[in-house]
Image (cartoon, rainbow, N blue to C red; front, side, top):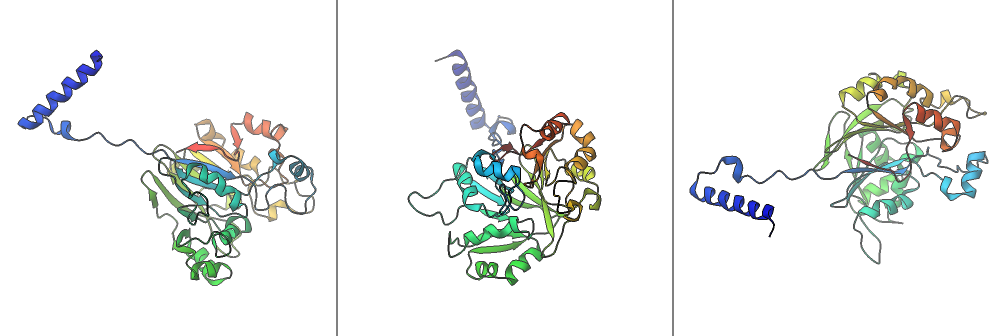
Length: 329
């Protein structure tokens, strides 16, 4: 037995004796505080709703992605996970849900030899654009066939799902359990993990749009994959980051510059340019904020890891979120 071990045993014996006599200080009889659980955010996809390659497109990036699987990008989604328990929540259910669940299951127990009828603990939806909710269909009768899977959505988004097929069938058959959440009202998902929805300006044809402030035991993350120009925000983005004490910001990086789509004016599509975001957040990034761009359109030259746009991002202190990247919270 080592000297240190003997000392620890002697101290423990002395404390036990003191407790039995009622002379120990109150703090000595309280157990040590449990360590904070490990919480991670995992990037399941980083592309705009059409993915990379995009259907029907023969641009250089889509052609390269068809030839080289390493250049493919799944549609933007984030998993929030507690590795110790396997608890997992998705932010958005994309058309790439099947492959993305395989990533989730690396940290989540699953039944052997058969289907997993509850592959995640819940889904948080941002809005009703194609890449963000179409994957809900795979939880239905024809595929996974979940039971009462919690799906968190704004009241308007929930009403859209209840009122339109095939999504209404998911609710009627209790594949999903719609739970309405409100901007500014924090939702505790698990010990050490909470999310607060933010109302985000965007093209809201079918629903409104949410971003999420995700708080772990050590760091806070802001997830905004879709938004109109930062000028459309009621409160400037730097103020929001400061108010929420954000450490990591995963932001809309759909387009790098205005001339990416020769047959469309990207300003009418409603996303901030990466260049505008870099200018807006220059000072917060210098102060330690970490910014990752996600939701990149197939036209975005920053998809090329060796291109000049990626080098310009790195030089300014910004990064493109990588699929499979794990961020500690």
